[in-house]
Length: 329
Image 1 (tube, rainbow, N blue to C red):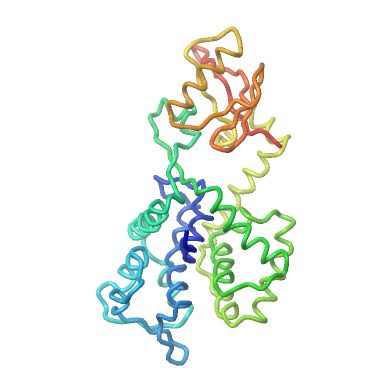
Image 2: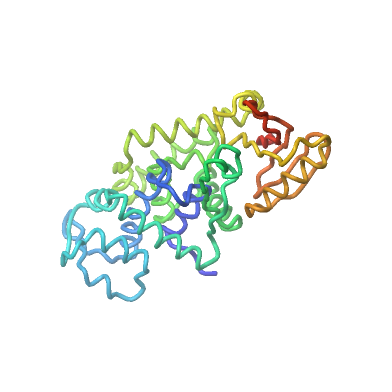
């Protein structure tokens, strides 16, 4: 398989596990960065004409060989029937990232179609869609899942170069900036590793011409970044042993970490309860493997481990079932 482009590689990392149907804050931040990634691709390919401090691009780029469909989609929304555009490096990136939601959805479809065609991205049911609260409300939930091998290749590639002080290419530098602007750095680097990432930004700024032009540009929105960082922190807290226990008693704190699946009847033994839950999960298209049976089974659902604990939702009529809680390795 040929190497992915900058925008495709960034999408593999950043779109993984995001809601594929709705425009969430996290996905909007990623989609703002994908058009900017396209501008960086074209810049690194030498498709811009540099005139002093200005970068010039005319609409002849649409008929140039090698232009990709998702690149055309981004440029079409930027040009808006103009014959040519020119601006500073910063202007181009901010112009690309300022597309309205309607245009961002079209860009999303174009970039994801390119990855689906390579069998590197798929849409799967979100486990939360099996929760009683969502099934009774008839809410459909789906998310993106990147190819595990390609996701590992992309993330481990940038991790090794950054953490081991390797030499970063211009494409690596651009990808590092895109991860910063989409608030995705914390998804591939641990909190301790991030302490080593900041010095690398400073080092690259001093040694790389591209980094000097790029790292001073900010396209993220502070309010969106604050929301995403809060949600990320909450999920991290709820993934600890203490948080897991707290979330079991109060599942509304982080529903994605505590999913209640109702059973058709109040079964007297764990085997029948589990059988009913497995039937529900497979009905919704999830891949499930039972790693441990017993009173508290351990399940592997779509590559994530969960414990299944008997539980009931109290109301006028108690609803019995099993609660899936993230298993801490």
